[in-house]
Image (tube, rainbow, N blue to C red; front, top):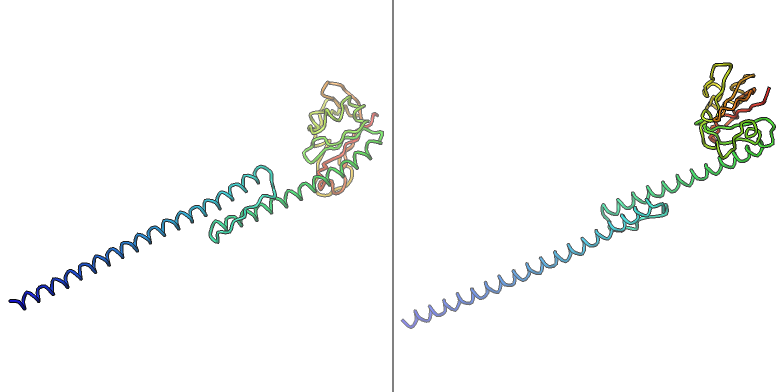
Length: 232
């Protein structure tokens, strides 16, 4: 009986020890799981903030570019799709900046060429009107002002047909005929006719001999045609 009791006590002791070990193991596992979850949450918060910061940088760069700051770039180093998006944005911004730079340079060259031509034409006694490829007036020399009673400020940028109506007798001649615009590098006279009548916006009528011509490479500086008029 005593031997059995001793054996039972030993078994109970082992059971208790096993339960304690199991409890400790479970507690340890739960502790490790809690630490793992906490670490994952901290990483997610950090990484989320990292992504949010990168996106804010990209958005700010885009806003600056839209506002006219062509030097705006997005400095992003996330080594993921966000960085790839930032790189694409920077390439696009650089290309846009270069395109606008070339456009401005081209506009400056066109303006310089027109100024040279305007200076030359200002000394010509004949009335001279130059139009761009849309037939809008870009040059109106002093003689043209005297002939028509209009000033350069009044006609600049306006379609030539809104300033001058051209008649051969009772028949009106359209701008496509008396002011043809060609883009094939043609150089020479494109229209010429005497004893025409021009009618200004105020209804003033003036008899003229009218010629239209084109200079070589005029299209490259947005110059469509040059009209010259003299009284018969």
